[in-house]
Image 1: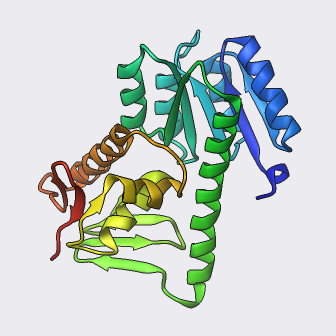
Image 2: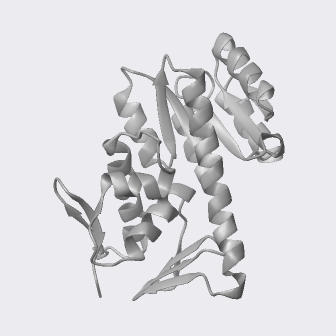
Length: 237
């Protein structure tokens, strides 16, 4: 993966963290935009889109949760949220609003770098599969569900469902093999890649958000089943 072609946004009011992470990413070849509050970050991200954003939760003028919500109204770009260990509710809220990942403070810069790289790789793989689908339809159809890799498009009963990269990959992993139970570890591998540690609650939060999005267009949606203690599966038609 060529870091030089990617632009990362860092949003944090702690200038020590901002400076150190900026220097790490620049040294690794990334282009970096920095912001110290959510309001200026929103303005900057709308005028100068990036490939991935890292957002602190506690910030002046507009906190990370509101910023994430505003971003998700306009973009499905990958987002990592940063939070303190005592902000579990905010972590879960961030995931429910569409964050792809979260890291707790204090954190290892190497861990953050690996998470950033993993998210960007997933984006590239998804795009690559879509390109490879040009000579193939690249479309998964399961009853009322249509997943189109080429367009990164999800439709239910001909209604568009706006999914983030993580949500799309999880839905695809389940719908590709209906009736087959997928453990949380298998879903983590499908959405994040191997050798990336993600808490089980992260997958659960993503699944809740996916269901919520489908139920906004179909209150009776019940295709994604929970098998407690085992994982999830997509119900066969």
